[in-house]
Image (cartoon, rainbow, N blue to C red; front, top):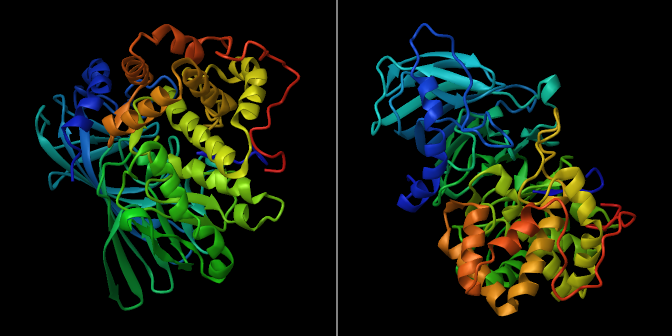
Length: 506
């Protein structure tokens, strides 16, 4: 995610191993699931430090099948059926799903009707028979999916209403406002989307198209991912859209989603994507997914977002003449780089979000340096001057403060953007450019389609450098005060400096 400063098949064994630590840490919570049928339902979570009620213990999702029917207006609920296949990892009398802001019609477990009740933002399901560790289970939920936010949920994400339809913005904890799920990035899964809409609308979702079926005045569009995906990265665009197509490097399929009336005007920006992908591949290796594209939505969100294989942008980023071209392109690269950092390699906990945003900011700045002659050192020096203030207000990069009540995306503060990129700059200064570039390539290769933590990054960096970097990186990522910058003893903290992460008008 890049905040806009104007408002500031089943996963393979590697993916399962990446989840093991969180599943183990949640084991004590599983005893809460083993309650008598008469006990009241309770909300659960896996204990994430920033979002403690997100995710649920006792199972590991392998796939989602999300079936949505759009009524042709964005102020009425969609009818939906979500089917979840999962491995049971602990004996359960009940299982919890994250779901809120929708009406549940029925729930079946392995085809048998199950009892259900709400608890907080959880849907608590009681199957007819107890589930046992090692079972394969299918949960089918018939529900509505409401694009109109509740009064206390405005700005929280989920469905975003555009001038002609809908898009999704689920980061960090809003996918469960759209469909029932295990809404934590540690539980990645395969996705299938089936979306039915009036014939005048075009639907695009994550993954590759799986067919189009027309019946009367409606069309059903199917998409399937080829790689596991975190729930917060799910994307469905419904609108009166054009879908320009082109090829990227090595024949990579590219498809974009733009308002039909704006296709010609936006084409010069769309045409930049192949070269941007080639540039990123030259830095970190082959693009990790089956296709790519951008959605230019006619909506006001306050951010751009890296949904998997489809990056979401506000259309006005590309039509506002005050934004310099170099800046717009660097924002495009910021979201593109998330396909490697955040989407393919996903954070194990939300405290690891700096691994997403710090790297995306790093490549945004590097692209601006190489393509627009905007020196990274100047940006990093300004960030250094402001860094202690960022740490005081928002926490250090790898230990961000919890979100402000009522502002769930407020973990996305300067410390996890330029503050985290500053830590990467310090690391490159410490180990040298060749070792740093090797580390980046190994990071996305070794953790592809999986989850990784700050500890994993420190371990790999130490291996690449051939020495223990634990103390060095711990200081940069966790300390309340910013350490001295290697190679720049003259850089000082200056509370009066407000580092310009992006142009003030943006």
